[in-house]
Structures are given as C-alpha cells and as structure tokens.
Length: 160
Image 1 (tube, one colour):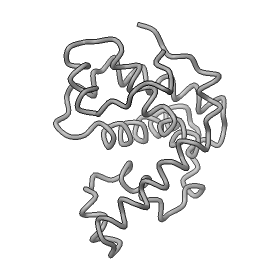
Image 2: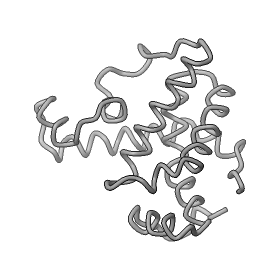
Image 3: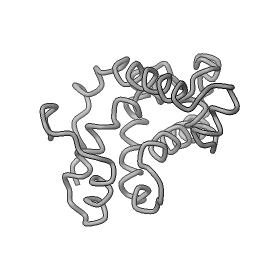
C-alpha cells in the first residue's frame, strides 16, 4: 500500500495509470478517495459494519466494472456519484431504509453526488460564486474524509 508520505498524484495521472492497467493506480484511488467514499456510505447507513461492507463492495465494483475507464471527465465527481448511487441501491436491495434525513440538506457534496449538475450550476442554484461553492465543498470534503478515518485501519486494500 502507498504510504501517506508519498507524493500527491493528479487524477489525470491516476486515470492514465488505470488505462495502462498499472496496479498501483488502484492504490492511489484507494488512498485518495476511500475516506470520502466511506463517509458518504456511513452517512447513509449510520452503521459502521454495514458501511464497511458496502464500501468494500462499492470499491470492488468500481474496479471490476471499469467505471473510471469509461468517463471523460474528472475522477472525483464520478466516484462520488457512483458511491452514492451504488450504496443507495445496496441498501434498497437489502430492504434497509437509508438515512436521507441525517444528511444535512445543504451539503454540497450530497447535492453533487446525488444529482447530475455541474459545480457552476450548483453555484447558480444556491446563489453563490463558484469560488464560494468550491471553498464549501473543500471544507465538507475534508470533514467527511476525516470523520470516519477508523475504517482505514480496519479495511485493508483489496488485492487483485
């Protein structure tokens, strides 16, 4: 696994590595996005065990279905939307109601991960500048990623 002291790699470089089928690309995806993926799922379930189970299934499906290879835009929104949609389907298939009311209604990450709108469209919708929306998203992203960091200790990177 890549340690947290490793250099930061861009999404474009990760995508290029995925296209070239370089295994380390998935480690970078995991290191960069597992916190936010788990946070989204945990906010829907409020159950750590279930969230971890769905997180693993989400990550595996993201890899097996080659979701990130079939996009022509940034990785982050794709992962956020896929995680949100996949987790909701998993909960629905299991007959489990998800915690829609638990998620703050003004969460920009929730809006972007559940609706197909651009950041600019969101800014117009909430009457803020693009810069203000980006700042709020950055704060939410950090909070959500850090909120449930224990899962990184209990979930090991999935090997091929």
